[in-house]
Length: 245
Image 1 (tube, helix red, strand yellow):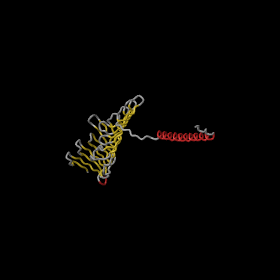
Image 2 (tube, helix red, strand yellow):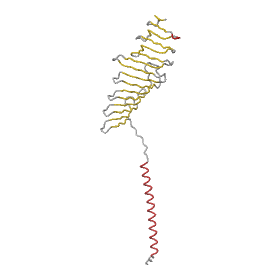
Image 3 (cartoon, one colour):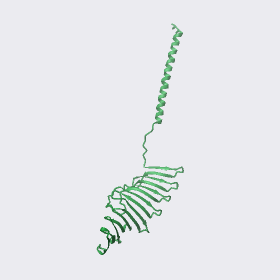
Image 4 (cartoon, one colour):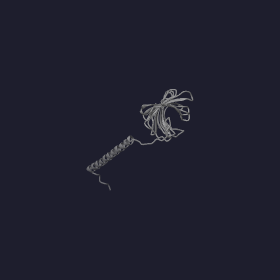
């Protein structure tokens, strides 16, 4: 039995339905493509958070020479940063040292330390309690390495200026200028950590003392109460052997 042929209207209706479905599919595909494209762009543009872990970083120049090193010290295990010039000389170093000190060193073209700035737990020149905390210091070093100017400031007392110069391998001359715990100013001259001339204010009155090689006061001159002069000479055991007036 032969099926009846569809009329032209039915065929046109079916074709129109197929075209409509195709248009809908194309629109859905276009929307999906746009969404996928946006997602891809967002994924590329989004910052990637990541952590790089290492115990040593080295920055090299165009010739492959090391110019910057950021690492952990092999001896102390503490971090440091070192900058080197084009000739391979270290010019700057900053880091934490074994004794918890934090220092920055500036070096000249010969690799010699010329300026140092830091905070440590050590005593400043001239002594003081061993448990001093946070001693901040600035040090200037001469080209020979024998001459130093140092400024110290810590929780123990007022700032201190210390100037030293080596005169041979066994002799170091120094000058100390500062204010003691009582608020009195002093200026000391000495050699090899031994103060030999002490100029200071004693309860507001000027006084100068001379000591021997055993740090014993042997002569003292100053102004007493009311501004009267006071002179005294001492024996090795500290006894007054002469005085005036």
